[in-house]
Image (cartoon, rainbow, N blue to C red; front, side, top):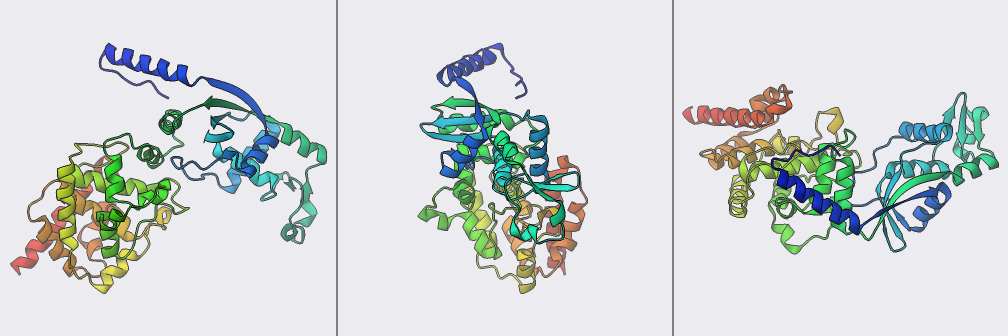
Length: 391
């Protein structure tokens, strides 16, 4: 993890004392674990790969094949990070590597080596009967045994709490390019250590699916549930294609805009005032309450995004499409916000949003211009409504 900049020497002294206290309470040990044991432990449930605060599986088939080939040819993989609770090992880091091992050992895929496709123990029937049957091969018994006995290094810490596990995970990954802002956000929200986390889950309880948290009866009355019903479609943070946690980031951004008019960009900005949150959530509801949306707009809302990378996201949950500009205008306390948005939405048909502001804001590529997009959207809507009233 990159060094943190401290304003005062005392701040560093305090951080150092806290670090040493934590380290002394959870001393790490290093083990070298045979692949055979890793496979057996995962299969038996003694090794947990999918912890709720982690990012979703990332590696595509080609990445798994390359890693296994590098392992066989090089034999120097990065080590694992494991939190051990009794007889259960919890994989804090290295889950993609273990999934790659499991897939190969279970004959889910082969490794291309030269003109051959090499399987671990058997050629699956669907491949044996295929056109490439003459170049399919199986590892020898000796080769399989040597691979299964290969030992992967693991840093193991015992007795960690949930909060300590999450901190360890974040400390390893927060400054790595491989982890997106959304993936880091997931670990922060699950830890519920920041002043925003609990309230984000309260306003948008759909995120509870991502963290395997139980729903509460009051979730039915939340703003997020209300908006999903009015828009005709819910965000799905569990979608398997959302590997960078785009929808979790979208919800965080809408929430931060709603609370104080500032964008979320890898960190919470502005104040977290419960009273303001409740007031602004009420304003958001007032915009859509008893509002009749045209069938054309409803169809557009539930349609998938035009973005090739975000086909899994319906238009309604593309932040810059509608909910972001509305939340920005509420968070910045624009005058006549309810009347303006109600008037605009009541007039919307297919492509109205695109022609009014979406085409323009989509051309702004600079990440620093995110807030500018919402301001432009509000200005275009406000101007259009004003013209309509004048006519």
